[in-house]
Length: 77
Image 1 (cartoon, helix red, strand yellow):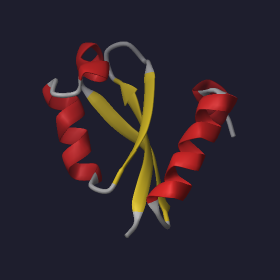
Image 2 (cartoon, rainbow, N blue to C red):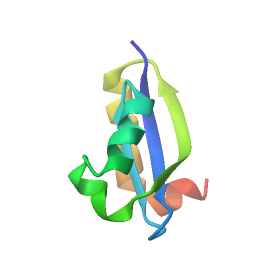
Image 3 (tube, rainbow, N blue to C red):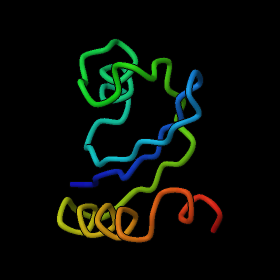
Image 4 (cartoon, one colour):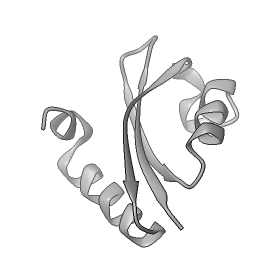
């Protein structure tokens, strides 16, 4: 089943957040409704990048790579 690696940008703080999910619509709603503790303070969030990945394992690898590189450097690619 396909997974997504997504990058959000806070419209209030300019901060980036990234993660992985199977259901991007539900995940974005959770981030913007304050139901995700790590993104409560930056709402509203906008989706700035969405990558469809073959499976969860590969999505987690890409998420780890983004974390290692740094979100700012990743976004400049």
